[in-house]
View (cartoon, one colour):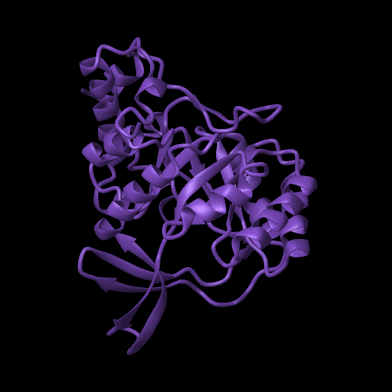
Amino acid sequence: MRMHEAVKSPINLSVDLAPGHKVGLPLAVPILLGCSAAGYGDSPDVVDASALGAVVTLPLAARAGGAPPRFAPVPGGVVMDSGCPAAVRAVLRHQAERWRRANPPVIAHVAGDSPADLAACAEALEEVREVAALEWRADSLPPDEAASTAARLRAASDKPLLVQVPLVGALAYAEALAGVADALVVGAPPQGTAWSAEEEGWVRGDVHGAGVFPLVLHALHDLREFPRPLVAFGGIQSPEQAVQALLAGASAVMLDIAICRAPELPSEALAAIIREVENRALDDVRQLVGREAR
């Protein structure tokens, strides 16, 4: 199916990732572009933007750090130290106008060394209408502290909040965050170490690649009773895996570094999702969610 045919499909492809929020987070299609591919909210020109429901920025903070990203390739993926987040106000000076013209919407990933720093970042984004929601990664804190920090973020912003939880131990975070997060991103990449021949040193950071996907499916099954939407993130390399993530309980999928190798993946994933809905004689993509995890 060509992309223009998918867009004209009579199937309802829209999802709301914040149905309990006063504004919500409606997406035209259940596919997001993760920060490693989207940069500071830019969809790469080689990616068909009509196949994306939203794009997620690289980390933004009230104050910038100085360390650049570092990478080390490993079989089937990469170990990435994402460096220090950019200063939110500096990014806004350069990106706000582009975001106004952007399609799809922008989700800002916020970061900080303390709840106060996170709140300051959220407050800086509060009046930026082009930012549809916030995302925050919780795995550096134990579940109870993550919940209290997320509550501080909610108090600083009226925007929907997506919280990225770890793939291992996701259930404990889900239980703690059930009353705070509008949706969970499943999940924060596992940590690893790899030797970088280019830098002649070790790189410690997030593990991205095909081997992460079984962990994502396992966590989605564990969270099948969670009352808020789930976003599958990690290891999705093919259209078939995007479909599997929805069947396992995700309301949407977030694609990331696989885009660098296969920029057509969002279009092909959306087409595969539509075929799955049609093959099951359904008329709404939401009817796929969790269908094989019950």
